[in-house]
Image 1 (cartoon, rainbow, N blue to C red):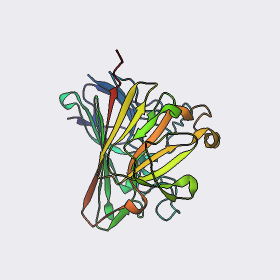
Image 2 (image 1 turned 90 degrees about the vertical axis):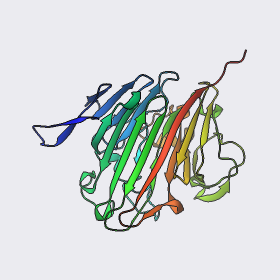
Image 3 (image 1 turned 135 degrees about the vertical axis):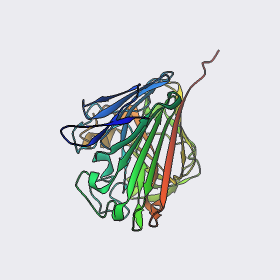
Length: 308
């Protein structure tokens, strides 16, 4: 594992990165990872995996050409961490949207390259929050940890440890996947599952068949299993497997709504889809003092076999 040094200006103990990892400050402070099977980049702000490209398949995550790489501003793309609330929260009044974790700088507490897998562990406490200590965000000394394991598969674990008080929170790994052409993409694994359709004022519906795209899609599924993004143009299937997650969120703004989103180009909507791992709305997590909860996603990519 990594050792530590002390920054002369800040006095903060910094991690010395292992071989295969390098620190960068452009466009935001980040860590570049190079393993025998993949390359990637993780931002310290939000502990956000920004890039992941297995050698066999190329880039899997999507980043907007208009993403704003500014301290304290959310970055559009990769895997933002939505916590401790999703959207405007269970009761619809929380700000900023999707919580304060994604715009806060998490502290790197561990790094390594065990058996060729790039590993990073980040920690978030109340004193790290972008808007300063907020007792409602991380009450009673609660702590969040985010673990990244990167090679030919990408694994992310979000662990929340309650402090001295009961803690109720929502969470989501808001993953942006790169696709060849959205209208040709389908998502398997959600057939027969109920969902709340946010484009219809959270109307409760049931999925029939695979998910396909013809306009805006914004749905929160009651779903704890795996989903598969089948992409005929890029000739690959992305499997999103998860554990301790009762919500799967599927989102794309479509050609109409994208025009109102300042950090996505109007032409880019067809090049990505969000399939998110979470516990939101009625599936929010409540921890008793001292208890912990870990939500996991494992992302794998398989190329389609060529016909003879």
